[in-house]
Image (cartoon, rainbow, N blue to C red; front, side, top):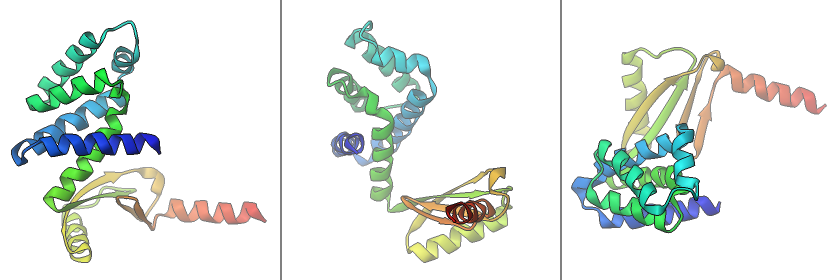
Length: 179
């Protein structure tokens, strides 16, 4: 809970510093850095270890930031995160910043999971139906996961609409094990 509050504050502060043309490059860079923090044990070690000084940590993050196309204000922001010992919140900050960027664009990110790949024509139908229902632009990403067996799961922020066979089986299991 505290992590998300801190992340939202830092994301909001960065968002307010940027002009419209630098929001999307900053978003992409933060998302990449956040994913790198999640995926790389070595990177987490460098930014968390007291063996490395603040300048070393800033240099590593600035180099990554440059490779990801981050504007200069983003590099300065990362330096502040290191100095304030908040760089561990980077994945949460990236997520909060992405939400702010989507809200500024007026788009709603939607994730659709299915057991098998959905054909492009059906993907367009789903996107159009979601756009009509939500009465705003949507940015739909489609993922496949064989565990779902059949059906689809749609995630709109914190709201999940789940019509998969897996969720029904899990609900039945819960119901049967309670008695």
